[in-house]
Length: 196
Image (cartoon, rainbow, N blue to C red):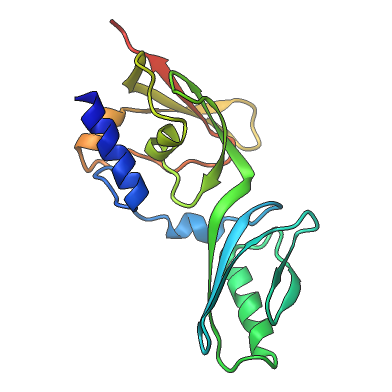
C-alpha cells in the first residue's frame, strides 16, 4: 500500500497534477516574492515574436536578456521584473510586447528537510513547493518515517524561535482539506519516527 501511495505522489508531482489537499492558489505568494542572487527566472515574450529563455540572477543582482541587455532585478517582485522587461522591449525594439516572467527555482532561499526521509538536507524553493513536494524532493519517507507525524518549524520573522505547524500527510492525500501548506524560506520540515 505504501508503494502505491508513494508512486501516486511521485507521478502527480512529475505531471504537475494537484492532488486533493495540495495548495492550489499561490498567486499572491508568488507576486510578493522578491528575487535574489542565483534565482532562476523563466522569461517569455509571447507577442509580437516568441522568445523564451531561462536566466540566472548573477551575483551582482542582474540578468541578461536579448534586446534588453543587462538589467537589475535583485529585490524586485516577479510583476515588477515583468513590467521592467516589457518597458525595455517597448523602448525601441517591439511594439506592445507581451512578457511573462515566472520563478523557475529559488536558489537564494532554502528550506530544510530533517528526520526520517531518504535524503535529508537543504533544498531550493521551487514555485509551488508544498510540504508534500518537499518530502518528495528529499526522497520520501524512510521505512521508519511516519506520514502522520510531520511538522514544519517556521521562523517567526523578527522574533527568536519558530512557529510549529503540524501536518498529517495521510489526511492531505485523502482529503481536500487544504492542509498541505507552501514552504517558505528558512522552513524546517521534520519527519518523526512512527510509533510502533
